[in-house]
Length: 439
Picture 1 (cartoon, helix red, strand yellow):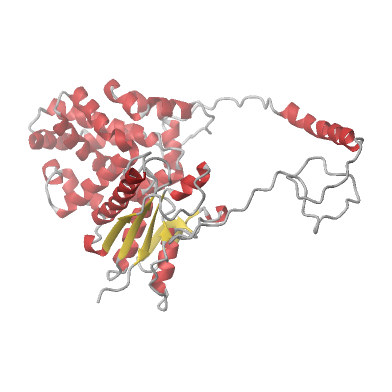
Picture 2: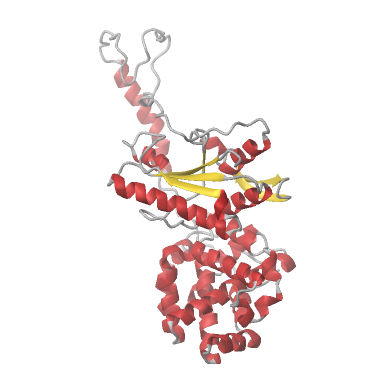
């Protein structure tokens, strides 16, 4: 299949009916509408190109383009798309989600750049972007349904057409959406893509400069062992040192000591009591597509993720409602020191919303937690805001607000020591628990 993503998106946004309809609905000239919609589409496509090497973000986008709401005839009429009709609201919600995913906290700045380029006000520019986003999703969705576009070929198309995509973005918006990020990716070697209209240029790999010192490493270790073995041995202390095993388990070596000393043993930590589940082992971090009978379709989540734990609890008819049985979200990421969700978080929220829709009588509580860095009161406030924001996202996906309680716990109930960055990262989290049925 030969196609150009830039042409596909531009054609979908600048057809006569769309441009004239947008101009009439927003009270601007057709020239401004055409200029604004073309720029908005280019910016959205450039933002997506920034995610070309992020499989989670691409997977989330790929799911969105197949949403049935994008097949509605509402998208052919900008006035209807800007209305309060249910199908229009769903399509605009998908557009808002993709903008949040691609631009994050820079969305307002990108809209401001669009306003300057098209010569319209910020409110009008925001409406143009709101029209462009679902139309862009529909255009790429057409490639999925009609041309067999997959997540992998979408990523390849983005990588193979980076220069074209970025060159189409107006100067007032290019720096805001991350020109450097796209060019950084372009410098990496990428396989050529004969099925694309603009194949990627493959740069030769640099010579492996590290091969020579790596090859000499065994000789260096052998020399170190030879010198070390000739030293006068000191009496062995019965105390356990950084490199020794306890005396009760140590066996005199029958062969020369190993070429390298074992790494220092880490001091085990005692988990602090807390109403949360333990962090997931690394072996269980892979995201997989799982058919969930309750929602009658596949959801993508980790084997030990919050979706799996929640489903396991809900399917267990003998499960007890325990205020200490919390399930941690494992793919929610917040912007630093802010309550706003970063890109890549939406798939898990979408999964959770689908599960809750399948169990309409279930009520949950969302708990927010921070590390102990900074002011405790500020941490408590931030944890509450983050929990509330998760609830807001679930409500926007069709879950009734009265089914969700929230509480911020701040730096209370740590699951790891706050003395290391790794431990602090584990303590900055969101968890949920199932509430007992209301009488």
